[in-house]
Image 1 (tube, rainbow, N blue to C red):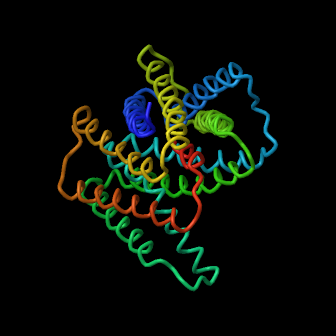
Image 2 (cartoon, rainbow, N blue to C red; image 1 turned 30 degrees about the vertical axis):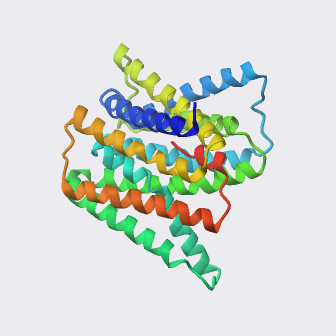
Length: 303
């Protein structure tokens, strides 16, 4: 299958996973969804690793810990935002990692006394935040403020996870091992969150039903398969083309939201999403000109 087709299909699977997360929110807390998503991913990757005769032993456990910490928090915030926000809005805020990366580059250049900062990079950041203002103001009600903030923070932490995944890739870690330990981190963090809520009396682990189990399995399986497909797409195809096609996930989420959840369609929201996508593509292109991009590492930052 061509890399472009793999990327579009992976984006579709991630969008479908977000639908399952939103539906699963009626049966489970965010911590439980993150936990079961991690357990499913761990199981699938463990079996895949054994079948290929590979190993999960790592020489850099500390790097995996910090990548998993930022990635799991980003994932949890994203799942939390999906519960109350329109699906396309939550997806768009999480996909702002490219814009945050551009902001990190600008900030780093300023702190290090860089003599030249590409004004186009600054413009892409400003356009991206203009898009955020358009998306959040017309589409988020007062009781959705914290969910919107969570979605915004998930994008920031996703950008941080990208830096850590890059470090893992440069240390020689294969993508299946990085995703496995990320899944493990999610399972542990989800379990601890669930136990903490139970201990504080704010929640209890929910009982299972056929529908609930099916949704949890769907979340984990869709995410893991999509990650593997996206990784292969980046390995085979051109990074910038794949990065552009990755944004089709927002389109899929928009259609899902309208058809399944009756999400409102407003001109301001559409304009804001368009600005964020344009800014993200621009930031990706400008970053590629500024710093080398490891295509496989970029792929596996996806939640």
